Length: 412
Figure (cartoon, rainbow, N blue to C red):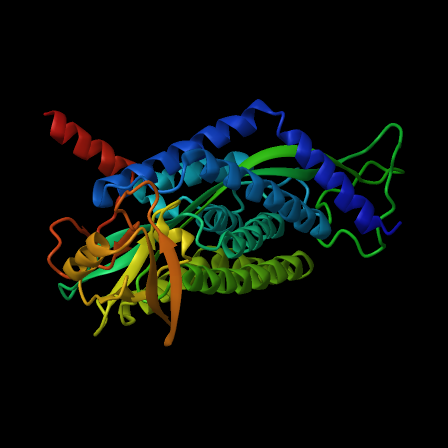
């Protein structure tokens, strides 16, 4: 069998057994805590908790496991060993950046800063190509997870823009436990179960030479990690926004990975690789956010009908297949142009009724019915501008230090 197929099977097998590691379930607990907070935020704004917490966490664990297999394979393909990654240096920088601003809690920033310090000052003792390759491989994995997540993790919100308009939007947040298996280079006393790799492998060779007469061999070591994604959809639907983010992040990651591999051969490229890690990531974030916030809002009242911001699970609206951006033109034979008319149409509708919907310019008729006499359609409409509860985006920094400072002020 081809060595890569053998290797893929071994990685999948090892990832499966990470599920029996207590550390993995501690990470799952942290993921559950984050999704619980998202539920509470949606409950405060709309009075609806959103999808079940168990389903969200179970989906995150399943998608994270698939991502762990993909990420581990990418790391193994380039031959990235744990020996000189300098995680003991990177993690303190991650924590320090988190204190300044939560959005900087990312290996692209921390790993890049550690790599820049090594290039400029020779400290800390890390291998720059390997650090940058780790950042790239994790972001390749993240781009895939973002893409496959679809609308999963999208929370509707009412947002006031800088120009004062109140519009519908979505916060896009995902958290995934990531079971990985990484390479560890060693000189074996005996060799058993060895897979013969191609002559060109690894792309990132060990910087140290093995003892005379020996050569490096590699073992797969389980590691538990986590990935998170945060974004906002204002001018796009959640699915469109995710596709854009995933595509741009994949381009950044693959370019960074290629630069990391080249810098292992040409030392003068290491500075550019180290700088590209944080600056490239920040440029990507700023350009994507600017494009989204300056675009025309997607979820605003239409000229005719009532636009759907989101639907509630297990209600007539979700069972009829309504989704964000659909425009309800008619319900039960009564035309609707605002939420008051929609409520009136719901009260007069029979138990089984038709909904006329416009989606991307195409008008269709959908069948729906109330269960048990309950008059609840299950639609969250876009805001009409009279809402009292809404969120505002602010440009001020926010980190753990700011949070602690605010807590002490309140308690005082």
